[in-house]
Image 1 (cartoon, helix red, strand yellow):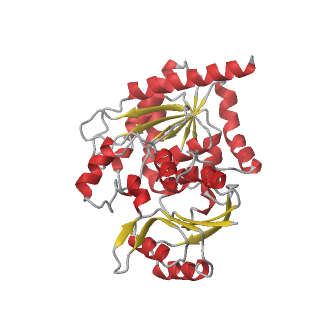
Image 2 (cartoon, one colour):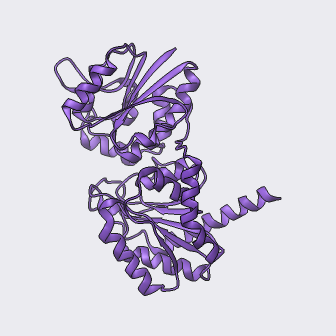
Image 3 (cartoon, one colour):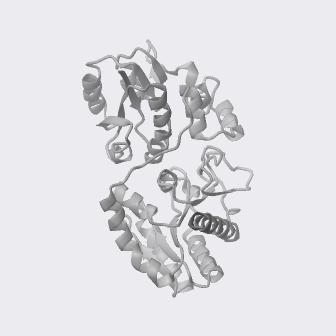
Length: 360
């Protein structure tokens, strides 16, 4: 038996996309028993994965929570400890747990954050880079490999893909919410997940651009398309503005507003009911990829190269000089309605072609 402890607590989308390492770990360690340490609230993203035996939830910002978890997990010696967060408290936590082999970020004997040589390809593009932030940023911009490919190489496993199993009851409940719209339009259901968090505001497109995209796709599809609006708890005002503008510009558009308070797995089930998700670089993108939902994803401050859509979609990338600068004010005006609509049309047409091929 090989006992493996994975420490990856945040952010939600990063936790989910990191599940791509699990098939390779199980393949390499046939008798693997994997426990995952993650942040409270992120447990549903890993708990149902068939490779995960146990989940330890912590508050990564609370030393007492980490201390308690370290005491519990430290009662045994792990065969492999994979520590994938660079925050100081989490690195200290990982360093307290006995393991025969370690990979990732820890602290040394004098309390400095360090990382093992095998993870240079990832941590060398981040805040812990041994030659400083400027060099790390340059490597980040030059990188052409996906997150999953980098992590698989670091751990010496076969590249996999993220997975998020959902209960049939959750999928059925989501289908009920979306079915009426699908019947009304007799066309594809297109999800809109165009917001972003506070860290990189220009990951999001403005509400008016989102509404204009609805108008354009409504025109191109002669009304035979339904739209499903998604958002997080901090996007109440943003989504209200999107709804108002869609009602003003395209009053006949079939729009389902899912609200901003869906629990993670309900959100994932609703995304699963879409034929296509137009999305920022956010949790919604990683949910769609894990659920095999076609995407049109757009990128301005962050790296498009890191994202593998596994042949199910397109990436619309900013053409501004500050693309992939990780600046909070990176320009995204080159992510136009026309570019997004063109990508949506191509992806929907490709999906229809694949469906026709399977039915023959």
